[in-house]
Image (cartoon, rainbow, N blue to C red; front, side):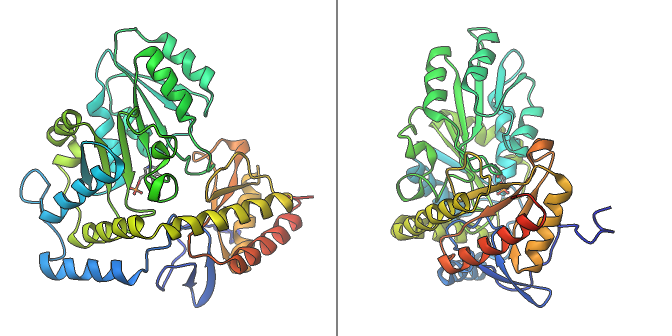
Length: 380
Ligand SMILES: Cc1ncc(COP(=O)(O)O)c(C=O)c1O
């Protein structure tokens, strides 16, 4: 139906390099849909690192980490990530998705409990579905609801709470201080997905756990390379015993080919840039605060976001597709978010910032979006 109406918004092809401006079908478009928060996907140093690694090691690893697929740069990246995140050890996987899918089922079993926020990412949902534990959910960021679920659990059983640190569509943060208080009260274990936290929050982009000073209290931290780290892949970081268990049991680690030399070297270089160029993170926050203020002043409904992910609520699926198309025609790329990525009454378009966006680009996009939102009477 949306295809017939000409507003189908998916699989739009980019045929240029990727930065704040991309080329699509011969047309220049401002990119506000990317998760490249640090704006590093076209950084020449990272490109060179990927090329050099390809020259040295080849294009693939043709095996899993357990067998023939471990390169010295995989181990180097794991060591650097463990140190960066602040845990004993880390393991790298070929995607962030398969971290959640492979790790979560290895942490709980029959007789245990897994407790998730109802807005957790799809990869957490899939990981949860693969466990034999009792599966519990609580209303998004509702700490009373979380406590009620914890009260339902057998006191001596393992209780694993799994949350996104930054919710990927809404841009708000998990209430980690309160989650940690409940963890201690009910003797639970906490797993935090920092996919959208790394790069953006914490010292030099160490993430939301670091931002709250709670890295030691959070038991397991995962992240991905596909956002701030300008590559593809993912990691989990925790204490030695947990990592050793996962190294020998996580199925997507053992039975999945390891990440390419290029992707691995790119993530290493991006991590070095994060550590040595804090001005990128500062710049991201400067333009994020600017955009948040401007969206609010213009009358957009932007929810509880506290990050460079800015949801512009539409609350109507047809209008969400329509406004995505109208913005695109005006040269502004944004992502539509409809169920199951959100509740039916919460449809939105997701506007995301990169450290490399200029205020002029943001102003242009906001003006065009305001025009489209008014035309569709989303903003009166
Ligand atoms: C919160 C969250 N976790 C995990 C993932 C999966 O990561 P990747 O796409 O890098 O495999 C994503 C990706 O969108 C995500 O947003």
